[in-house]
Image 1 (cartoon, rainbow, N blue to C red):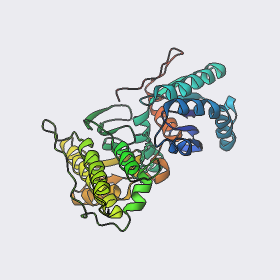
Image 2 (image 1 turned 30 degrees about the vertical axis):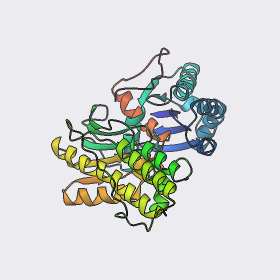
Image 3 (image 1 turned 90 degrees about the vertical axis):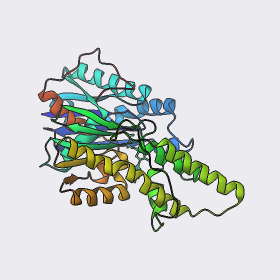
Image 4 (image 1 turned 120 degrees about the vertical axis):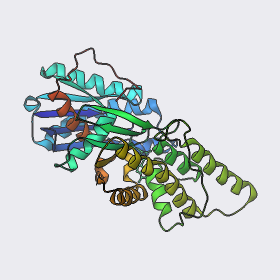
Length: 333
Ligand code: KG4
């Protein structure tokens, strides 16, 4: 089954052609990050406009790179949420028009299900059940994945997402958007004990997390140092920050895996590219006898291939949509 998949939930326009869920024939991505970097974050209106400008040519590119024609496509898939509503609407309406014009079924895909599915592309042997740690720019959650299309959230951030926290701290340190990668580069060689940063405790749920206190602590620390004219150990602060984020995520992922009887942990989303989090996960899984799957860096961020992959499994359960499909800024997994 050949699926043409669209992703436009944030600042990446992506179109992919995927065969039978796991074989990626093409994965064309047009990133707008440079444009948004000028403003220090994603400007939703600009994101929508850039998706409109790029999506048609990117579709031609994806088909060409896959070596297939429109007529070869069996189904059209699209991210319908969660994400920026204007950005999502571009992908959803474009996919609807392609499906209508080709007379092919339309498959709606949840963005985070897509992030989890990125692992099926990288690891042919991976199958549910497992515990997924989904950490991206807009979401941070622990997902109990019982089947390809059966899953539920068992823990989540109560405020900021991990990626959002990386981006905001990077901004206060004068680093470009998106801040995750520059923060990681700054942290290299830094002492992760240089600063004592808070770890959260969510009173009524040991699997829920919180990043806003950590973010505020770093912002205040940077501002205080600037006001007093005190020097800042920037690599030390970046390393201490990464350690604090990792401490928020990794022990909870292990706890959730054990609580829900999983032997496998899977990481997903843009923040899963972070080397500190990856190495902490590796160590913790090893110590607890859990199998760990870490997606390759190019599959951590937003892409169309992961949508085409998940769409295959949605189609096996006949999860199709008609032309009334809408986009949703918030959407249950
Ligand atoms: O999954 P993604 O590409 O988009 C969403 O679906 O949100 O995630 C983007 C987020 C951004 O906040 C970015 O700063 C973060 O992932 N990120 C990282 C790293 N690379 C990207 N965070 C920490 N370390 C990284 N190496």
